[in-house]
Image (cartoon, rainbow, N blue to C red; front, side, top):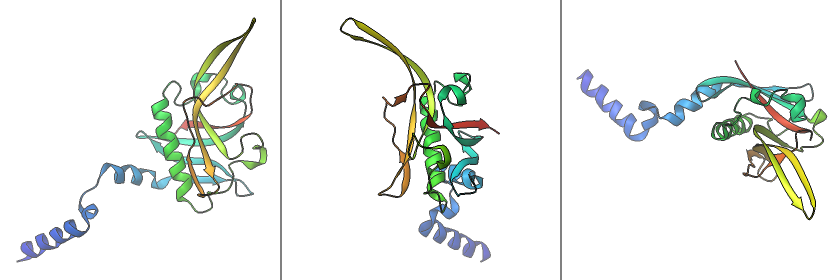
Length: 181
């Protein structure tokens, strides 16, 4: 009798609340990020996200304003250098983290954030572009990356990336520096 009633209850739970019995991959990855922490400065500006799980590895994500050359002395020290797909997954997780916590609508590191507004970039590559303007030839290097930002109308953080987004290495911008834990 106990076995029959237990099976009946389990069947009812599965029918009405399948997530109570079966764990899906989406739930599992969400649960892994439950322990992340938004780090704020004295004014309440977000300056980092600690303990963020990206592809089964933990990172601290620091929002650092400056030039690419100042922040990343060696380009290959960027966590997802030459790996745009992983950088996009990281961007999605950062946006999700920013959207799940109360007060995450404040500007990131606003104290020095004059140039990038409410946007941030995870850098993924350097690109050398040569252009010909009549007889004059120009050659520039650009930092490409995935871009996130705050939508004032929706009051949410989202992915503002497009394939052509880039800045010069000496342009101050808000970069995300992902450091393995």
